[in-house]
Length: 444
Ligand code: PMP
Image 1: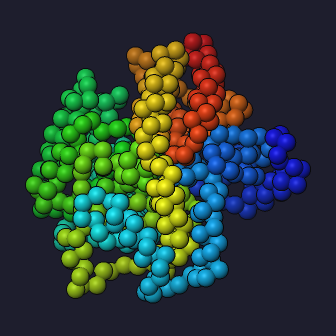
Image 2: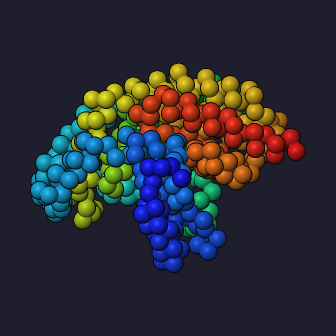
Image 3: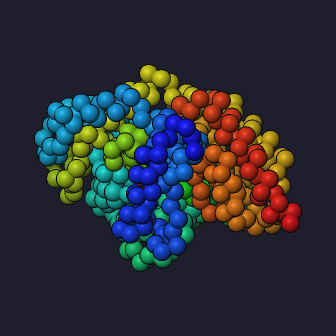
């Protein structure tokens, strides 16, 4: 163990683990066979596991701890807020929420000038859909097959990824389309330009076949995250904006994972100058120090609810601790240039270094991403692109001191945006070494 971690923390960790296995019911898991990692300490870009081992946090936990662990300004803001007004009914004005709403209105694109706060991402998606339905008087929501929009009943049915299938209830008023994803193209495209063009033609066909008069909104992650971090080809999101506008359909950008600096811009849509009608956020808005999400709403959608009441609300809408954490987080990100740093990490370190790893390691089928948002896709064979089982690779990464975010046959490399260069390089050195385990599985 790291000498910084004393026996007291380790024994508290062992006790927590025993209680966890006895009483905690975990997300997305078969409970009995689960072997969760214990965390006994977090600091900056590092976490320490139950054996006292120090790991570089390339997961940012759920791709949310964008400013790293234990940022002193955010911790202090939460403490100050807790002592003054820890909780208040959402009907009452409170300074933390007002200031958070102002900052978010300023940062989000276009005329997204109004903010409805939720507890996280899934309920932000639920409310964005409800707003779109009431505003348009239409019901249907189109979403991408390769997507993740949350775990609640509607959000999971909108989700296109395989997580939907066990709970799919063919929710009324939802339909899916294929998004662009050049590496595993559904459109037999040879390059990004062709993929983007064909994906747009396909979406227009789906809109026409479903009937524009039935469709309230198209919801899309600007850069799909959980489904594999695939950056849309130039022109695609602009094309979706044009299509939706032309057919009288709202465009909901789901920025829950890509938003708040992850991609090297404040929001993913900013890379392409796209202004959605509704924008969902959570995670990075306050780095997850207190649960928070929300919907940024355009002036036009806002007008629908100017005289008619909005049919929805939450006890913790705009919770003071969560909003105080958001104000402190956004301020720290601005003062410390974290969004610019994420962009630089992408172009100077991740991009070139991952390309080089791909060139040397036969198990790596594809690397892709931008900013501090990267995926390494592992395959058994580069020609067939058959996915590789990465259990051993993940175990090797952890043994060597790297904690990646794991999804199917992919490692997602999504460190805090302010991770020092030398720590990012160290993490990639560990990955380089660990990939030898995956290469053996391919060659053997
Ligand atoms: N939308 C996107 C794009 C997400 O990545 C997630 C979470 N991974 C959600 C929605 C759901 O957010 P939450 O888990 O906070 O409900």
